[in-house]
Image (cartoon, rainbow, N blue to C red; front, top):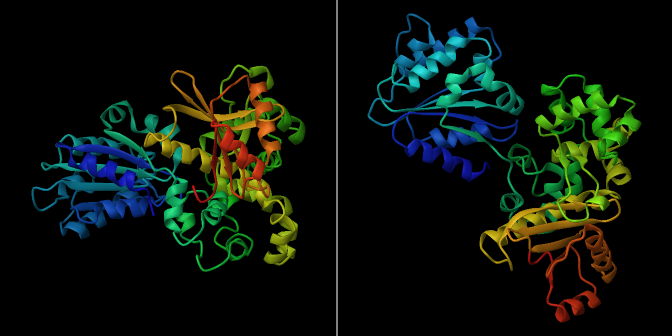
Length: 453
């Protein structure tokens, strides 16, 4: 279920002449292992998964696996010897994968020294591709360079971060579902491959939520807090901040008043959450109406964590006392459409991006974003290099898209000081007859419904 584009990147690197050193990383549940399995399946390879162990024990475990894999006798028990004894058995390129390599690199500097010797043909004469893999985004992006050293950093041929699936790829995972149903799943689990494989296609949306999230034996029951605490300390502080953001306290000053924490303390924790890809700061698309825009708001970027802190965490007492079905009916069902509107906007942006790639938009878009006003928003602004605009507004929850929504859009465009000859109206439901008539008379408007999506 991993992205095929990442497999192609590995294959392209493998096809290059000479030796390659690659860092491959992504969050837990990104299906990194499945990607590696698929890549090395038909190639001569050695795969070792590092454990949290002492440097001595790590060395012994890898030695045992090298001896077993290649039927050789190990004598010196050094990384130099291990990489000297690996072999492909023919002229084809050998792939050496050290998974969760941070567990070795952080404790034993000799490991990276041997890796560089291996790349530079000082241990193994044949062609070799070395993949150092990790499930720690924070470590790979913040600490790795200092740990492996400047010399190793200079010799990296690629750093590949495994991204989540986009919406189109999620739709392909569930071809039997409607676009609307796929958006609901996307709004709960995001595009995380390891999450999506647990969704049961024969069960309803509600039953999946009840079984997977709201039941004590469900796969996701404690997932959100475990994800936050896996690399971040002081869970109580992060819980408080995340619940506040989920409630709509999305500016630094709002968080200061809501939590009681000092502004410097909040800033530090927000930086940590951002580095871990849990939150993001949304800055309004640059227009002439800066005075009417919010100067930057925080929101929870990780989709499942967002769902959990919006619907589950605030009601944990009832979660343990109520049946999953009653909890869903009480706390989730009524607010779900309001919550999903943000993800519908994301889907509409992706739709425009795809049209842009195949040159089916009225202009070539070079950047896209959202304008967040002090009163009113513009869901989508897509702009060309010569500053021509496409403006979009998205309706997920209302029974139909109305003229009133068009008026609200024009009010927001005035505040944002932006004009456009191309206005895309997206609706997950229907368009009112007067909006349909407006689009016939005014060629600026393009109506996009779920069938088109």
